[in-house]
Amino acid sequence: MPTTLQFTKGHGTGNDFILYTDPAGQSPLSPEQVRALCDRHMGIGADGIIRAVRSNAIPNGAASLAEDEAAEWFMDYVNADGTVAEMCGNGIRVFVRYLLANGLTTLETGETLPIGTRAGVRDVQVSTNGFQVDLGRWRLEDGDPLVRVKGLKVARPGQGIDVGNPHIVVALADLDELADADLGYIPVVEPEPENGANIELVVPRDPLVKDGIGRISMRVHERGSGETLSCGTGVAASALATRHWAGSSAPNNWRVDVPGGTLGVRMFAAEDGEHVALSGPAELVYTGTIELA
Image (cartoon, rainbow, N blue to C red; front, side, top):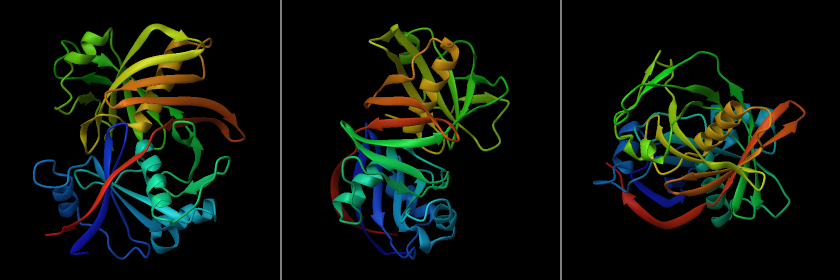
């Protein structure tokens, strides 16, 4: 384990990360170090840590290379509590910005950059507002989970959506209810998901569709991180759930407002089924060095 960490702080619509480079896969951080670094009072502060490691250097990367031999880099993402996560929609855009800024890869407009993740290879392109990532196929989950959120008077039904990691989306009546929800507490889900889930609270805008684009507002409690200002895969899941509820006439393009900004979602046909793509900004804030315990 490293004793001194050269890091970069970045964010995508307020969903913030600590990034560092470990090409040979020899410097993983322990869960205790991750928790210390992500602590917002006594550490750097972040929703998670992203390690840039070559896919051929770690076991998880072997599956990525088998899927796409061009997936040179693997996004090793760990939540703020030290638990690993399958994917992060905001994180992968910031990860690509980090790779480009450090001269670790190139990506021109119109090109596609494959990135290895625990949820499979994800393709990233330059977009007008930052980057677009193809999150791949998605799945509507069976079951009728009931979600209890502190600050809301009654439990609400949720819709499970899998976009490489698990989500449960809950529709609320209006923006006042959305503001009343206290996501500083972990929502209670019945039955409890085996591997946990991110919980999204969604309010359709009025009108729901404007100029052919669906519009919703969202807040999220992320598994392993707590409430965050944004969650990329959660944004995609929320748009998918809302389209499902709205019916066959609902659009395939969505604008999702989160506390940290606005993200775009697009559903499109592919050879292996319908995919969902996420687009939005990715910013690097500062670099530094920190001594590790």
